[in-house]
Image (cartoon, rainbow, N blue to C red; front, side):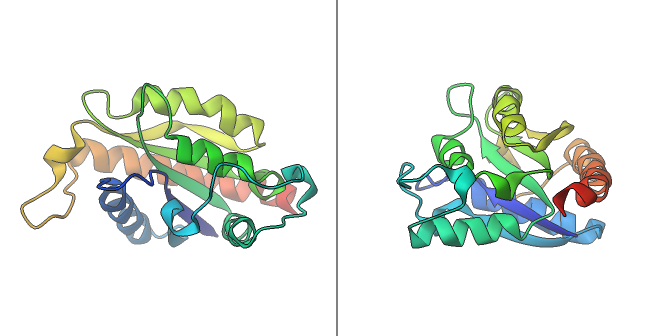
Length: 186
C-alpha cells in the first residue's frame, strides 16, 4: 500500500518540509507503506481554476492533472498541516477542493504542528471537510506543539517519545483502514 505524506503549507519560510521529512522517515521505518513525500508547493495550484466540477474528472489544466495523478496513486494520506487561525492552511483546503473521486475511500491521518496547541484545533476543524470528500479521517493524530523548539542545531526536526508514540499509533490505524477500505476503491 502507498501512503502520501502531504506537506500542506506553501508559505515561504515554512517549517512544513522539516515536519514532513521527519514523518515520512518515521513512516518508512514503520514499514506498513511505501511512502511518498508530496509537497503541495510543487504543484503550483492557483485558487481553484477548473471550469468543470471536480466530480466529473474532466480536468483542463496540467497542474490539476498532475495533482490528480498524485492523489489517485495513494491508498492513504498523512496531511502535515500547520494551524492558521484555528483552521487548516488555505493551500490545503484549495488542494482538497480541486479533486473529488481521487480522494474516495481512503483514510487520512493528520499531523498538526504549531504553537502551544500543536495544531490540534486545525486538525479537528478540517475533519468535516475531509469526511465530505469520502475520506475517513482518523481519530488518532500527531500533535507537535512548539514545533520550532524541536528543530536541532543541525536544522533537522527531533521528535520526542510522545510524538513518536502518537505517530506509531496513527500509522497502525492508517494501515488497518487502508486495507479495510481497499475493496471500496476498486
